[in-house]
Image (tube, rainbow, N blue to C red; front, side, top):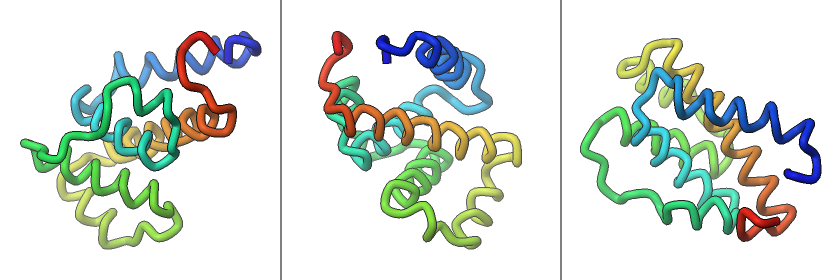
Length: 122
């Protein structure tokens, strides 16, 4: 993305916003990011920290990862039941942020996969 600094700048600001000012815990966001990295097939994204953890100590992290898995499989199949379960554990603001974060991470992973990005030097 360094070849398009006018895109990279705002992109980086949004990424920092998600990780530095989130309503959600950083470990939850990281597990979601790792889950989506596997879904997009982006080698660079996967190399950042490896696969998602298999065990989640927190119910909210498990639910967020389940949503990310459904999102990666086919976001069009996410049903009202899953959203209702999520609403029992997440506020509306948190759920909106989670889906926005997943959409952003999916876009970044897709970008990396399409261009075959393997390291930060590209």
